[in-house]
Amino acid sequence: MNVGLRLLGFLYGILLRAYQSPFRSQFGDEMQQVFNEALEEAARQGWRNTLLVFWREVHDLPANLARESREWPVANEGEYFQDSFNSLLADQPPGSWHSALLAGIPHLLYALGLFLPSMAEEIANPLVYWLADSRAFWLLVFAILLLAWKRAWPRWSHSWLGYGLVFILHQVKALFPSGPLALLILVAWLALIMITLLWLARRDWLGGLLAALPITPMWVWWVSMEGARGGAAESTLYISIGLLVALAVIAIVRVGRWQTAVWLILAVILAAGLPLSYGTTFFKDLPVSSRQEPEGWNLVIGVISNYAAMLVFTAPLWLLALWRQVRQWKAPI
Amino acid sequence: MNASPEIQTHLPLTEVTYFILLSLAPGPRHGYAIMKDVRSLSKGRVVLSTGTLYGALKRLLEGGWILRSDEAQPNGKGRERKTYRLTELGRHILEAELERLDSLVSAAQLRVASDAP
Image (cartoon, rainbow over all chains, first blue to last red; front, side, top):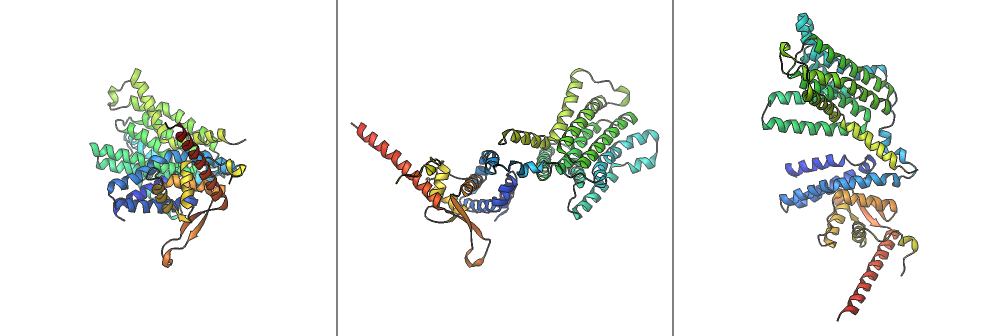
């Protein structure tokens, strides 16, 4: 099988992940095998036929998924709530303090790593500056991810995994700062993030949530940092939000309830969104002496865009919650 | 032969179900063979994706219309393949559908013949 066919086979494997787990475990291997056979035969008739085979799968996927999803409760009448999807969003056993702290701490460390240097400039303490350098944070992230890999990815490690995902973009963006390739890379990265988060969240909502959360502050803070090093006041704001996110994560892991998690995250987004949005608009691209309070559309657009970024990066979780709600409405009485 | 009322409740079949059952009528087949056979039986009009095929096979298995079993590869090489075959119920349903279609066509032919100048 040549590289092109292998790639299509790999992409088909990703498509298969969209089916519900019981269906996949019953037919997934067989479907992959049949798809590979169909691809090989089509390849003998030319690349156009090969692409048609793949396109047919993509084209039929939404209808097939809808059909499987609709029929699942009927096929398992009386056992609806044993459906793997619903058990996926079922309450988790409360996490230990140890795992809750390990899941929460990177949010605070990241905020410190990113914003303590600008505070340190004001208080002129080189030791603090060095300790808070972001490079130390990234080294820690990779050390923790290595440890997590050795320990088969315990749940708390998903917080660190989220930061690892953003670090990839951080590095790639540094290599390709502008131009069409940079845009392409950004789009590819966004697709990778969404697929990874959806995959994680489908396996385990809490793991998916932990991995999604770093991306939200990273995105918003990173954008804000492009133009701003606002000193102690701004840094205090952002570090406070890092602490807020860390506390929310600790509470979510400790409690392990889906409803609690949704409300806490919503509260963090609402609480952090306004000062973040205001701050990023206020501190944007201007030296400290000439900063002015944002007004009118600047303020509105700044606030909306940052809230939108937060909602987009937690989208897999909202979609799962929405999906669950719709399915509960449709559940047999 | 008239189908029992219980079998009548399953009719008419969808086109996909009809062609899959028809494909399995001569004997057991594996997934890819069904896919190709459906295309050939429908003269290229019905081309199944794997998702559509296996969604339909799942429902037929649940309904007890077909059975799934392992087929050893020749020479004992390679992975075992799953094959599907019609059950008695599946065969009765297919026969009932063929009867239904036959009666539709007969009625149409009679009417067209009598209307002809």
